[in-house]
Amino acid sequence: MNGVHDMGGMDGLGPVRPGADEAPFHAPYEARAFAHLLALGALGKWNNDMVRSHFENFVATDYLRMTYFERWNAGLIELLVETGVITRAEVASGRADPASGKAVPALAADSARTMIMAGEPFDRVLPAVPRFRAGETVRTKNLHPIGHTRLPRYARDKSGVVQRCHGGFVFPDQNARSLGEQPQHLYSVRFEAEELWGSERGARRCAVFIDLWEAYLAA
Amino acid sequence: MHDDAEHAHDHDHRSSELPSEPALRVMALESLLVEKGLVDPAALAALIDIYEREIGPRNGARVVARAWVDPAFLDRLRKNATAAIAELGFGGQQGEHMVVVENGAEEHNVVVCTLCSCYPWPVLGLPPAWYKSPAYRSRVVIDPRGVLAEFGLKLDDDVQVNVRDSTAEIRYLVLPERPEGSDGMTEDQLASLVTRDSMIGVAKITSPSTLVPS
Image 1 (tube, rainbow over the protein chains, first blue to last red):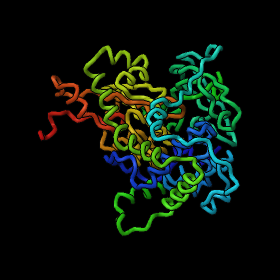
Image 2 (cartoon, each protein chain N blue to C red):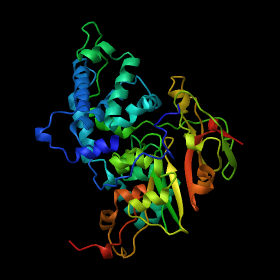
Image 3 (cartoon, rainbow over the protein chains, first blue to last red):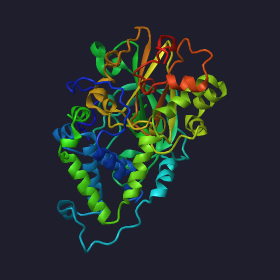
Image 4 (tube, rainbow over the protein chains, first blue to last red):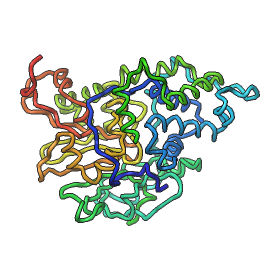
């Protein structure tokens, strides 16, 4: 999706405001929105790529207007409705439909730490050898899929050099569409600034390293 | 824009202010989720508590300090960062696939996620507002030297700047350069020098000789 979330290289998004503040949340609702997503992930109704897809899938003006955790909450509501966990009528009324079935057991407090520490590995063993080797020059494809992708717009149809292969990883473009994990090799690819931004703005001695799946790359 | 909105929270007057619209929507969803038995408020409190009290940049600082004093650990960190970091008890969500990149006199790495806000939670905690902001996400890939200068970090022209865009599930921890004047410091003392920003790559570590003794 050529969405506003894909903002690498855009101009006009304001100044960076450095800050030393290390508090993870700045209002109670931010902490709650964060915890809702983590706790509900334990239900197993969706995967990580579906989450990312829903968290970027807003009208551009809404995306920019909303606070970070406001997007989490809005994206989570869409996930919950699409997977049938709640209904739009319930969201509108704020009350459970008496006819709705009782849910699977919720994440218990004493399981919270275990869930966090277990994480969710995305690497997968692949029978095939990687198509590209370190040091090889590759070109990203000129892809503009309608749905979720992790190939940033600024890095499409660009030439770079493979730095390393990270191994097999779940492919987000398919996984976000509930088409299965379809794992493939993931590479760190180095792009010189001039290749990405042209001779005028591409700074000397600057490069961007991007992690890219094999399906994004051509020889 | 959301970074402005988040910035505003630093200055609000919570005691006299009505809950914001986002806050009302989040709490409305929570009451529905609780009524349906989908979340246990005690579990929510436990999750929040872990990220407010335990998981934060002090974890990453311990990794960095260990790497500075223990060459064998540094070697393991280079070969398999996830496993080496797990030796110190850190790992799990958003740190399942760690890679460490090393900053030094000739090369400087800085980390971003242009597409969302991917960040190595187990070692740095949750990302600061500026890391999530459209400004940082859009600009650091096209003008890294300019953005770093706004953080107060001016790099010489002959330093190679490498921006790491976290587009996949690999999470990057920057190993900052050990500052001059830190010889003879203990691992704990060294860890206290390490800042969050130095582990994202938007800062270097100040030499302890320039710090005012406390």
